[in-house]
Image 1 (cartoon, helix red, strand yellow):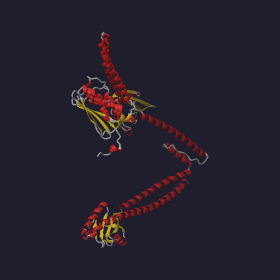
Image 2 (spheres, helix red, strand yellow):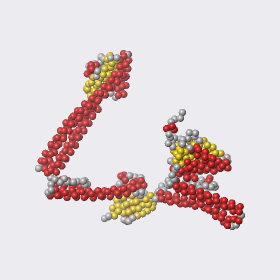
Image 3 (spheres, helix red, strand yellow):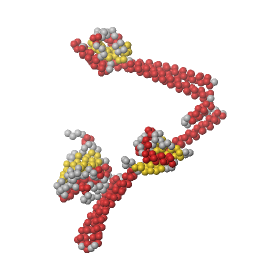
Image 4 (tube, rainbow, N blue to C red):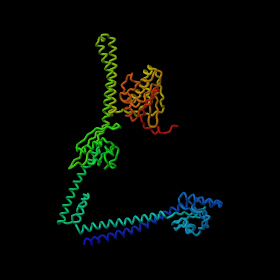
Length: 593
């Protein structure tokens, strides 16, 4: 009975769909072919009219007929079509593919006859010349109402036939797919009607294959219906349970992906089965490319592989700190994964490079502070001891010593203030008070402020300021601090009789200030460190200063979105410069006349 109902449902459905698709396909192919032929015809008519317009001047002078063949070949090459220019009596005067002298008279060609009779002629036939089915369209060539000849354009129907064949093939595939779908649908319906138990079996098989959304449609309240209710409840519970597991897995994946430490999981043989993004970045790989590969092929480090081997062999957590030739430091933690048996290991990679670097910077920072404070404190202590030894009774000498103490205290106070300011700038705790600023005015103010120092050291300070320097939004006080610091250093380290030149310019969408001196310059070894805190080049060891000025200047400029640089050659002077961005107005963008 089931087999009989199966075929009674399957065959009618299949035949109905196939017949419907066949009728629709035939109509679609026929309509598509006609539509494409019409489009091709319209296209050829337009091209033929253009050829007629282009060739009509050649008919006015019988001596220029030879040019019509050249014209036909040129147009044919340009539009990729066959062009034929024919006189009113059928003589071929030009053809894009053949020698017109060898071609027969075309006066009897149907498209030529129709063109002369009705204005447009069209014919589709097999061409022995091109060995293809061609569509020919012809229009008369006329001048001032007089018909001079016929312009004919032809294209093969290859594209149309290819399109029709493709449509036919698509419909054939659609019929095959539809037949398959109808047979499957009919089979499902037949089985649902005849064998309710098979529906439950099929749903159970679906769950077994991972399709947990299976539900039975209950149509009766008998034992089969009760079984269906029980099955649906079981399916829902299982689906909820799997959803909870998937949710927990998603949370775990989120945690792994957000971890800063690299995490890898291997099987008991040491092959990688899981890695988080941090591990991918650390060892430069993609998880999909390395699954199933041995760990050594990924990390390229035998020490890490040895940590994993010990963990798998001893079934005990292993920890090691490793350094590489590139200066990277890693802490590797390997934890065995043990259930009923050892199933693998979990590897955690903590990149300690930055921490080591910060520790080094902290030690250097503390050393620099100690170095900078030791000298003034030693001077103060020596002065105090001198005063205690009786010099305090000499009022003039005591006052001189007190003045020296005051100077040393001022220097330490300045250093502490600069340290606090540098810390605030580096941590972004300084709010810039942005206002329109003219950089040229700040340069003039810095020169005025430092003129006494320049005169005392007999250094000539000059300027080369741009006359069309735009206004920038900046913190006036802090940019003034940058300029003053750089100019002060230039004067300070330029010998007597030297020069300091301050210039401004506007290259692109930024303004630039540069300070060049004829001082003793900076060595190549010192240049990379010149903007570091507490750094003093050899030329400044004998002078005063905290070594923080250029570091502060660098952070101020960077806080404005600009950049700062230095160019120097030992013994030939230095050039310090910085740039600040600005948004040009429409007037700024217009070319100057």
